[in-house]
Image (cartoon, rainbow, N blue to C red; front, side):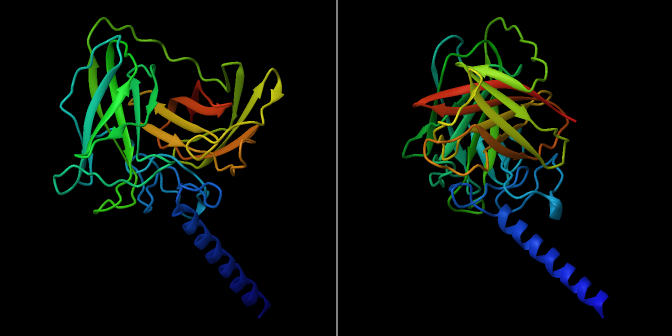
Length: 305
């Protein structure tokens, strides 16, 4: 009788844990004060991305990252990133026009806020240099224009991350991309070796965590300046940091946010991310954080086993 009672209690605890995990994976990332971001490698409806193992019951709640897909296609589940521009000039700021076409063949004009923005736009050259993270403005007809800073010659991939407010993709975050060519002599930069720290604008960012492809794992980021812990991080996009990671081989994109709760302009020195990156190899990471109204972008290379 005692053994049966213990077994029943164990089942109740297990079911409860799974239920809590399910709630965590479906939480909106719009309010880090009260909810955990969605799990990396899954959309808000629980669909696993290609190349990433499903976290299942053993996953960690609070993981944020890639949504539907890994950002390497222009079309998914009826949604298409559309642009007639295939070449952009080198060495000058330029606007890149595009639209998001829905399953009905029409431009999508109704988007949900994700981290305080209707759409996030990223640009990266094929050698993982030239990172840009923008928030374009949409015209009434559904045309977006991303105001890109000057681009170096070479091949570039441009990503759009968005969440439709209606239609079959309602409340699912999509990441789609297209490629463009910037004419001119291009010199590829070698990828810096994997490291656990980077310096930007006098700040040192240290990263701890051993990541294995397809396995959920924590990343701990500590921010310091002149050897002293930084505790005045300001909210940026409804969080204390934004992390974009690009895979060296194919430029797959992951974007992550810390699960650290907001406390006004008192963030830091430690931020915790949970990542589920589906591919082994080197990832180029761009970590953005804000202090005294200034946005800082630290870059480093992480290796995923």
